Length: 65
Image (cartoon, rainbow, N blue to C red; front, side, top):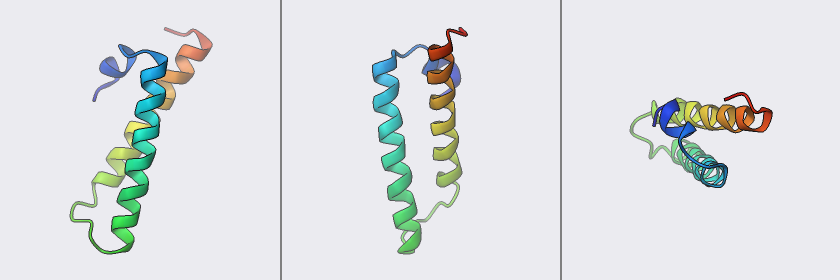
């Protein structure tokens, strides 16, 4: 999901996606700890997704775009 796709969503949808991403990160970390995670690159990818969503939410809050 790119930044343009994230910016097209409403704030309620962004909050929902943010919660889902946090849950996904929790599950990935849990799978990493139990040695069930195959692709370790999923963790930074999910962190980046969380950062993008939080950035867009902050832009909306400040009225920057």
